[in-house]
Length: 317
Image 1 (tube, one colour):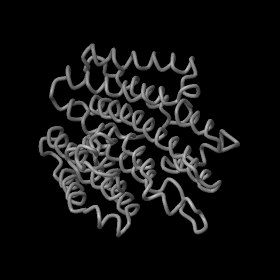
Image 2 (cartoon, rainbow, N blue to C red; image 1 turned 180 degrees about the vertical axis):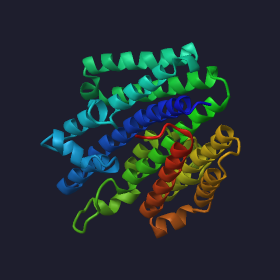
Image 3 (spheres, rainbow, N blue to C red; image 1 turned 30 degrees about the horizontal axis):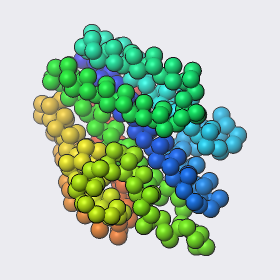
Image 4 (cartoon, rainbow, N blue to C red; image 1 turned 90 degrees about the vertical axis):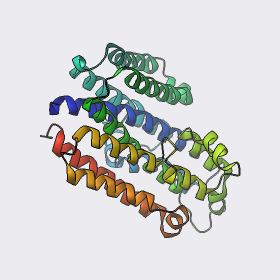
């Protein structure tokens, strides 16, 4: 397969997955902002989304004030921000257009219609008048595009590169979303609301809803929502579609199909990353530091993505 075609397929899938996960991240952060909290915690929550994407400096070159509206504007529809939903959907559509001949008509139409509908959403100012509806729209369009890909594309190497892009991005974003959920507000001495955070049913319910995992949690555990079980579900349960283990399993399968054994070092690194997640236990992760575990996981998944890019995709100039 030509590296340029593989590159466009890979990034097309990554960008549509990133748009969805950015919507999920903004949604859960917005719900956290609605919870009772101190002024310091409120400010921390506003910054958390920017810090996760390493966009704090860029944000303050555009906006003077850190307000919920400005953060939404910057992360959702600012074309100058490469991680915004707008920029991701535009990049996904442009990558699809570049390889139009390698896609089915249905896939191209799904990507193109999403781009056109985004402009209607922006013109109607849905982001600010009804942010929940906007985030739901982004998620549903992502589901639609993945469904059309799954239902019409040939299961060849190109399909494997689509999967690689999607699942690497999903693993990255689930880890970031978990980090926001557990560390979305600082816990300081003297903050009366802080000790209750770890037991707050609404906090953990909103996090599960952000990954469409609340009903799944109820089905698996049939009990009250607890932090340790949230970690178990979203890190270790391979039957949960958005868990870290499920994502790295899928990455390993796609990598074998895409490379046909031609990249032993990369496949070994992917297999080792899966083993590291499998070896984790929710109690140990919480005891030894979930943040450190997620940081190391993110480093590993990003290193794997870099190796795949250098080996198979178009070199970055």
